[in-house]
Image 1 (cartoon, helix red, strand yellow):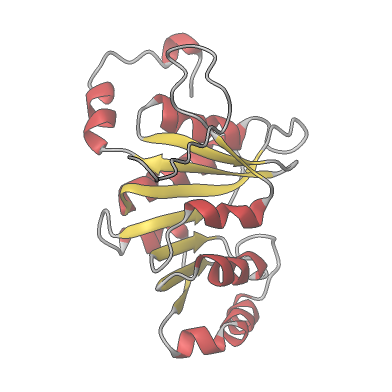
Image 2: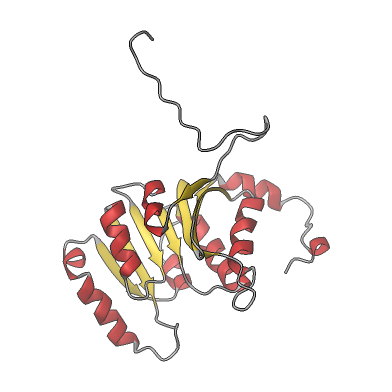
Length: 217
């Protein structure tokens, strides 16, 4: 239309007609806020000191943020003291109902909320393949279709958790449960998936099982 400016942004050039979906590179962990909706209902599984939760509150400005941790890692933590520390740090946000802290296992918390009731979930718990896969597949049905499932430590660490985090995340993509939309450019980077219509994953799940032929667990 005459007189109007049209802005077109390409994240990277397309190298083939099939190269349509792009993965955005984020400069760091804080930039994850770009793909998380404001005025949303979010959840962080694995709180630790609360620094990332504070960053999410500042940058995303969610309407509601659920913080979940049972202080099972690292070993030896005083669960009562850790819970009081987090509640003290977010006292103002808790008072107005923006933050709720749940001293709970991830599984127990996720089992207590309805399916497709959360706009986004950030997962930062245990890092072995079995543990990450468990946490992601338990979290996935709780995120609304089109919402974001994301997390930390997208990295291969042979001396620590091996391919665990990367493999578990990519299996959601492979099973059509989510589309990888962003990675942060860090040694222990963040990742973000857009949750897809569960019917896609269900159709694939009804196909013959090929995991054993590939040596899958």
